[in-house]
Length: 376
Image (cartoon, rainbow, N blue to C red; front, side, top):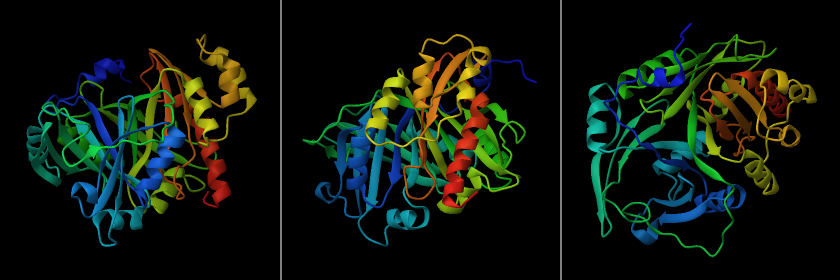
């Protein structure tokens, strides 16, 4: 067993692809205007920019929202034969682009392409009166794309092709700060090839692994490996199904998404009690809380924490610890009609892990929802 801590493991990653963090996450959706209203109302995202027919784009409409350092784009196709509409027809609403903020988008494309990446967007430069944004893109698992975005010479609201979006409608934010990690679900026997792809093409390193003995319940199981770049600013856990008595949550996702894709987005907060309280007030639904016995064991299993345990229990927030600290986390129910994409809210107090001690409680809650849908 490795004795390296997370910082030491991350330091083993190659540095040919410097990444400064997540630039944006783009969702392809059936109705971007209504989706934007949902994310403003329920999650407290703020209007930032818009692109569509009014800005000279004829085939789609895109609404950009921001909270903290998190930027999301909600894009809908305007014709049935568009790439966006075809994607939504097959997968439902979901994540198409995981965009990474880089210093040199052209070099990022060259480095990854030379290592075997399948191109999605050849390098290009977009210009307007606020400067320039350079972009390029490659495919990762399924139809998901990593876009490389270089914006050091741009001062506008978002990027060329978009106009500032002003809205009289606004909701206060809920304290979301940045993207902590994004989890991808891949098919049977596809985890290791995907891990190898991130190692070879992106220079990432595997910092944590879980097998079906660690992530299992009476009925289902999965395997997972967490991939990270060299500074830890981009983390992508990769899940695949494992054999169990019944259908796992990963199999359910693959069936309803009709392919591999982004399962959930983890977003960070400094005050999870406030954030979750606000989200619940606004109608965001979370998975069933664990039993009372889970919280009775916390003092022995976790030790001292700063938060009021009774408040965490009331909200159903999970707690875990690793050698570097503890974390608090909770998971929404799927935010689409298909049981696919959901969100994780996470608050870290030194811990760099991903809540392994909560897997059993989490999976049992997920299985309850699967059973209601008739998919367990």
